[in-house]
Length: 404
Image (cartoon, rainbow, N blue to C red; front, side, top):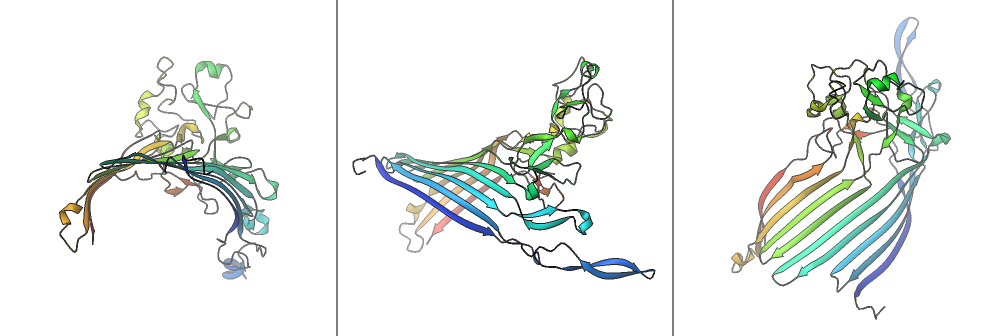
């Protein structure tokens, strides 16, 4: 390609490999004993018994990954692009398989199931202005990932994730992303006409209460009407950094965001649960609640006091999308002030502002990236979630760097 003068560099690359996950718990594959109390001759005593089901065939997880990439630079390296596609399949997952309690244990650690991750990664660098006094460079990166559960042990098609707060609201289902959000879907507010026409209700619901979708069509709203309404992983994550230099001044601005994911907020459930009492503190959007048939509000929040209880529903489902200015740094090179100094070769004064500006759609908490608790309450199925996670701290840093 010697005749293609506008191409500075071009490379096609590919790789394939297998790696393992060795995080098997201590003594996970051998028989162990535990202390148990029992009655012997009318007295309470302590003895030993097997503490779980032994699996001597336990082995590492295996991840097979294919990468295909392209590196391209054009216009004398003014524009550089790196693009990569990957396909990663993880087999023989270290999975706690549920078993009948009659075995003496409710689960056994085994190699079972398969997960697939596919996606694209892009990195673009441009030298927009390359003058002697003023320079401007831009870096843009974009990541797209698709996660899918391929199989579960024993040919199962789905497994409900336990919840320490109520019925399950997350599911492992073949063909869907891991920990898909699995709740009843809300569809407005019940009206007198809905009830007269036989709309499905949850418990003792009346006019002004939330209206739920009868997903299985049996005429009653219950846990069997849960459906997959979102997934916790964003469809894509992006970032953009612009760097400017003018004489001794330099400025960098990093903007970052994510789109396409959802978060199920247990904090939002605690603060704005359906059926809460009228004496409870309420979030601001309750000002737009249903008050009467002639004053239905925005049609999203039901009346202030309800007695039908609550069920896991999309009332606490939020988008995790956000755009945030992560970092802005302004610096000044003091090098000319130390030209005659044999010890100090240079210095730079700077001020940095972190997380001062941003926008998100998350109304169920303070930070759509907050993962401060295990919502499942089961370490075997850790489900990260927000139950009062702290907001991102805003930092203003002033400093000086010396070179010797």
